[in-house]
Length: 231
Image (cartoon, rainbow, N blue to C red; front, top):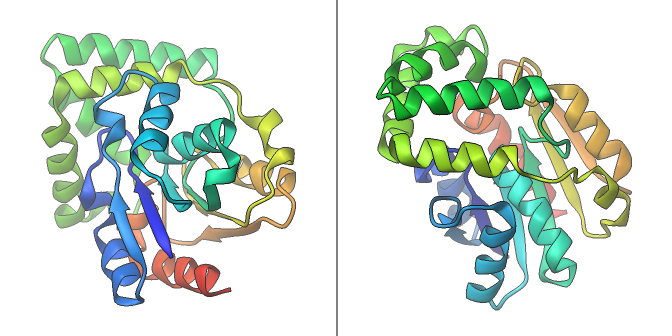
């Protein structure tokens, strides 16, 4: 199958490293999108990918990438063969989250990126993984590669997203929903809500994982993703 990998906010190929290797080993054709670093809104990102990709794709989106997958589904459902929505949400940001993102944007603009990133680690990971120096260092290096300007632009794009919950009952393609049991940013209730609204969706909550489930529990994610694709 043709699989389009959609990274999360300030993420790059590192967030899908284990999944890309497993998918390619199983014979799937993988493409990694970086549209989230090239356009200012989810609508523009989706439109650009639809222009660039002529095939129908299995969309695998993590966090912001899952939100982008839903936007692609909104714009061109005939181009979506299936969707895997990982650690994401169909809901818009709450006023409280908008306030937190706005504060973070101000700190990024003031050159205080590292301060924000360090404070975000307990939110990004399961408590056990937040104490894993190698994993945390890999995560922080990835986000630093994105840089302050991209952190600002991508947070603004996520803040401006529409409510995708009305779209969910219209989805007709196969859907896999995965979420870390300890995800504090897009908690299990959001995953359960999506799976309940999409006919035939498959839902799994992963123990030992927070928001960064593809990096925290790569083997669990790979197993579930490959089993779903083979089915």
